[in-house]
Image (cartoon, rainbow, N blue to C red; front, side, top):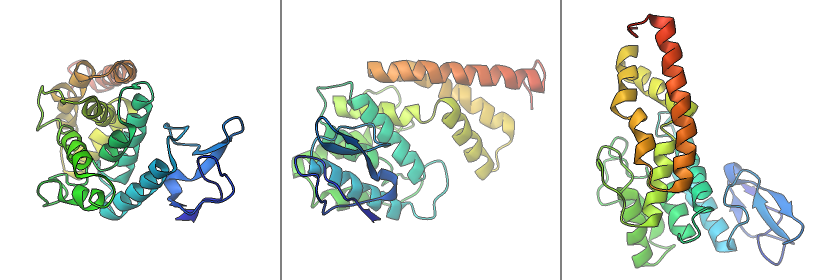
Length: 242
């Protein structure tokens, strides 16, 4: 943790909040006199509270995923958060705070990693941060993310659609390819089984996006995966066997 010397809002002289390394405040807007994290797609920030909650939630997921280097590690969570805020910036009708917290906590109770029930880990963080009503909205978003548990079902809210899209985007493109083979190696799968996963899931994701911003990003990442598979086919023989 590092103490930020500035604060988002009217007073840029001092800041009482500690911001994790991942979200270090850096870029200054001279016109609006706002300070924002140079790597944060939600710039300019809405409120000091939003910024503080981002830092607290990020620190919380760092603690939860400590020692986990798999495909659902803290770096995946942070990428999903950035995807979600990039989409949210183009969807003015959404509740940014709900999107932000749902994205950061979307894997906090993943059944592959935790033996929790009813979003226990997410609720532990949210209990002292948001109203009961907003907590339920955030948990509903989280529960709509999983591909395997939500086959063909669209989230009921715009916020849920954004977070679902953000998570699925991280399974596409170069990062999606890297995660697929990392997961396959971790679980002892031969290469041809990992390649089959592209047809079973990854190449389906483009047509399952909910929001227009996500559809545009997905189109580019889908094309990259198709090019990769075509090159892999050339290198391994016309049959595509490995």
